[in-house]
Image 1 (cartoon, rainbow, N blue to C red):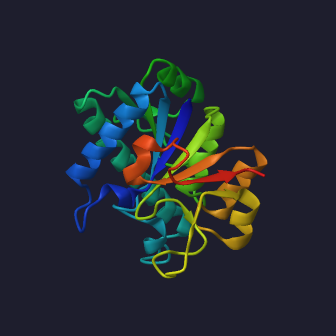
Image 2 (image 1 turned 120 degrees about the horizontal axis):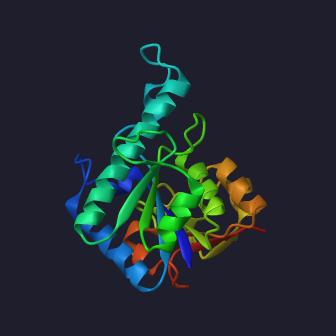
Image 3 (image 1 turned 90 degrees about the vertical axis):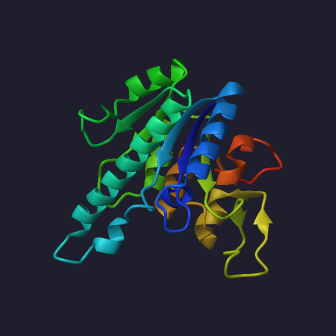
Length: 230
């Protein structure tokens, strides 16, 4: 299977440390496991451990668009860290950025990214879509569609799937093994932002939501939640 995996920036950190060597090591082992099972992998990584655009928007005269671009640069930093960590652990990896910066990584060209996947390399998509006002969730759905991925995997930090309510606030929240995209949108379930869910629904993209710790077994039926596009 060809999989696009969305990883939150917060999932890379530990406490106040922006990166956790234990998390990075676990992630590399899970990537190796999925590749050994015959899957082609591409990753989309957020930048929340370093910077969120909305935290600066409106401050110091910084516009929302500029703040979003700064947030995109945070995702590039995370992608470069993951690339070098993976390469040092025997996983051949490329970074493809939606914002051209040839000194540090490749520019995102869909056919080149597909060629890397066909050659057994991991591709990390950085800088989101290269446009303000779009989240890395939207990027994950867009890249999954462009790569003709069989599944989009949302690897969440702190939750094991899609819940009926926020389990950190509602003790009665239950894990939903299957939910359709329409229900997720109407009920505001914490799968992804609404625009990315709508795009996935429109294009019949299946989303699997799992915890970071379960990524290696993300395709098991017992693991996480499935968001169907109906």
